[in-house]
Image (cartoon, rainbow, N blue to C red; front, side, top):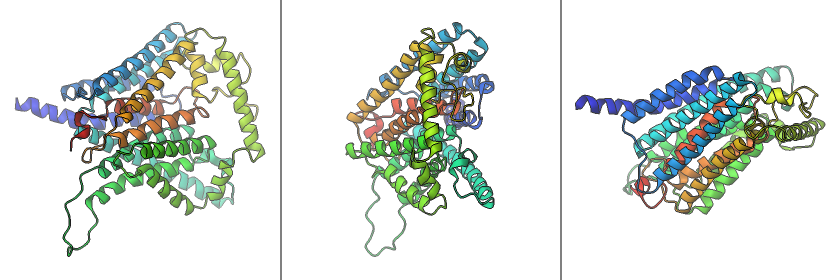
Length: 448
């Protein structure tokens, strides 16, 4: 019996870092990560079995189990559409990569959902994902500083023309989806119980809660600053949408314990930007259509989107299969970018889905997103405060909803040719976390 208890304990401790490792592998590979799909699917199957051994379920009295189950059914339908799309694909080697991707994501969702049975497991997951965000932001900061120094040495003043040396579009989407985890830790610390009253004559010390809030706050600011360094109008719009939605959510949900952690990090982000030498380039990027290059880029994106919609009208109900958009787009029009070069993607998430998965795949895709937002809004409507330092309650759910919405906004202006494996993994983990968070009048969401 003691050995079984020890196995359960070790399984619970290993589950969160293994999940974080799997997501990190998805995000760390640029471009086509199809070679990682099968090993990661096997890893997820093993991790799911490990989490099952650890005995961490999602059953609660507040309806989280039913909502999490509904989210799982919606994502299973999405994966099922991928199977049909692959079987009807005219070029199955490409679509098979997308099929393995869907299987890996579904296992990832199930594994993440299995980790959220109690506050301790949830906090452990948030800590590991925050650490992943710190590593991700630190690596990007080093690369940005190196590129900035090289361009400054060459006498380059306007950095907007060299934005490809700073941040990838995929990195921006992943950074947005990593933001909820440090913000969730901030919400948990802000909602923790107040310390006992201090003697009047006692020496003033920094409160432990303030010390605990400093690392996640720094990670959140670093992710935001890295997004600004992308010099991308789509990234700026997505970040502004995230801050606006998160701020409005915290203002509307009066019972949320956090005092606007997203807005506090936004203020720190602006202070950090004020001390950087790239404010001129940031303002130039944010000016939208003030230069001829920006006008050409906007016109080219319109042409790409129109060509994708024309192609989508000709494909079957289940599309042409994942990864086959470049093949079918070459036979149509509107595949040229700003410089007249061939662009193998419409740079729009929904347009690419409509071509590759057809109207059935687009409906399943939009339905899963709609269910996620519906479940989240229902939770917020009956929202409750935090629970003693654990990421839960409305204050932890609001950043998740805002991050997924902001990622969708960004992917409407930038979407890689073969999908974004890292962003998809983070988004499906967000589905599991949001659906399983205890927000309401029952469950552990209200216990102190």
